[in-house]
Every structure is written in structure tokens, then in C-alpha cells.
Length: 85
Image (cartoon, rainbow, N blue to C red; front, side, top):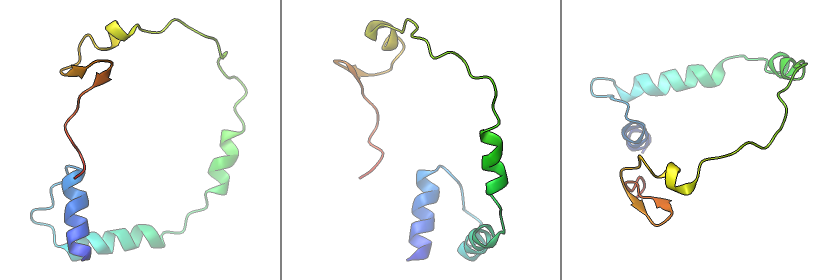
């Protein structure tokens, strides 16, 4: 079961695991899970920002300009390949 999930996620993520044993992937994930991390210090830094940009309304692109370089458009929507079955 875990092997099928790992292969599926790898394929979806465009990660090649041709020669990598699934046990190596699971060991790596366990190492990340077990890592001791203190995130409180990192979040403190977010609040120390003194200068923020002004929140001003600026002109945006027209729908015509947005779709100008799109490969495939249907009405006012981008058409993309199906990603999930």
C-alpha cells in the first residue's frame, strides 16, 4: 500500500524514483517527521516587519490580454490537461 502511494505521488510530482528503493523514501520521510524543529522563533520574525507596501488598486489586465498567449481557451476559461482521474 505505502509503495503504491509513494509511486503515485512521485509520478504526480514528476519525481523519478526508478532506482530508489521505497524503503529509502520511507526512511527519509521518517527522518523529516522526527526532526526537532522550533518554529516559534521563525514566526516571531514575521511580526517584525516595519514597512509594508501601500495597498492600492492598480489597473489589471483585460480578459483579452490574459488569454493572449494561452495555448487553449474556452470562453473565459483556460483549458488544461486533466490532472486527477
